[in-house]
Image (cartoon, rainbow, N blue to C red; front, side, top):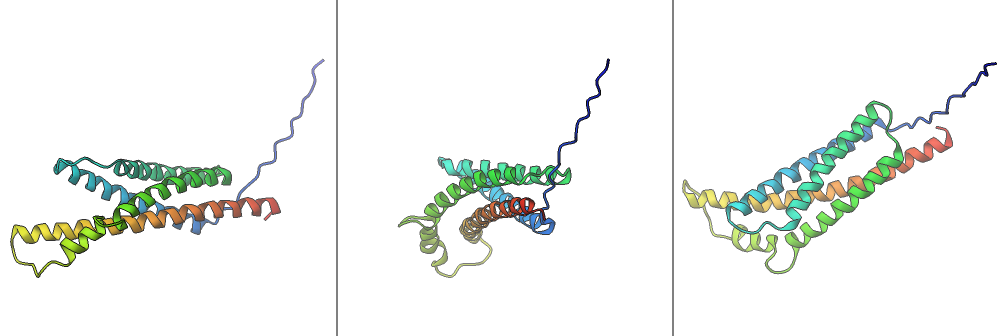
Length: 184
């Protein structure tokens, strides 16, 4: 005789993510990672053209930016197919937070550190120089120097924003989990 086995479907838990907030955070993370990626790729190019050793944290930040862009696309893809789990986002955001914080600390030491730091050299040799201008190679070099100094400050700001947003993603994931437990 044949037995009839009836399986009850497993209860699917649906997580409600704040769509607009999640979209804005992911967009800003993508922009921050793209700016830092382009900037440090440019810094690496300059170092190689000057035949100077490229510091390890340049490659570290390049790798973090690539992983962040991959993380953003993964979160978007999982959200689209309704498989975005808060615990996955929380763990991924924590790992990314630690990586970005490491890059932020190293970049801040190089930028704002003691005598001989990037900001110190920019103030001493670029910003406090006499009047310059006109159509010469010297003017072009000075524009390039100011661009590099300002780009360092921009990447520092983008790293700080990305680090903060990963903390926000952790808190957002926790909020989604707690709402799901309460049945909202």
